[in-house]
Length: 263
Image 1: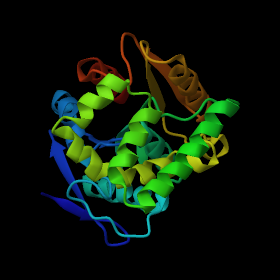
Image 2: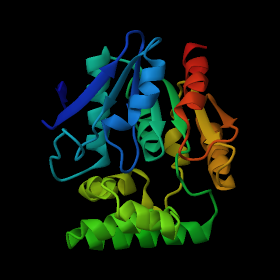
Image 3: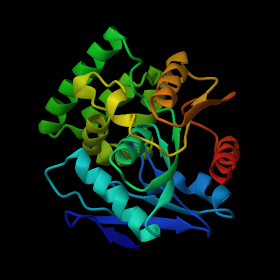
Image 4: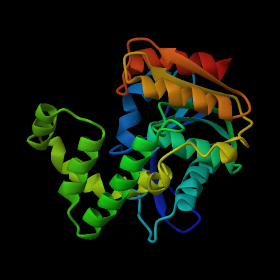
């Protein structure tokens, strides 16, 4: 398994598919590098697709203490390995990480973001609930109750009770519990303790062309946030993928990404 070394010495494991301009896949909560495989296989004829285990996941290290700055350095290390600059695609909280990295000058030449789960600006109730989640998650993880942390996250994202029960009874549950400590990392990336809203002033520094995608079959607030993100960066646009939810179909996503990245 190839690895790069981040600035603080943390080994970051990655996989690569295909040849062409480099495209870095950045996954969200409960994702390791394998989450990219269905999409990467569809894009590998046009791009060299890199997917990496964010720190604390899979075969990557987890040097403490955690900071969002370290995750940005991890992404920069993968981009350096890919040639020094790259396109980037971020999924969910991974989209927020890509956006923040670009705002801080990481050499990302085009950004594609799928449903970054910020709270809509001005939604005080969602902000309150997000702050409560951040506090509860911190307490639960401090007590090493990883299964409870995984369950809390799934409830917060409104997984139906019957589906939650199926997940907890499936072989996949152990893998989610193992990843539960990294939910704190996603929470930090999303600024949950501050209410989880888009850092508008910071992302205004993003100059690279930016495509913000949302699913037409998902909650309306995802599209609302996508509009806010596209309007906050200097060169952004929002596109709706009809019929899609947060669990976007790679067969629908891949052509949209290819069109944007080659355009």
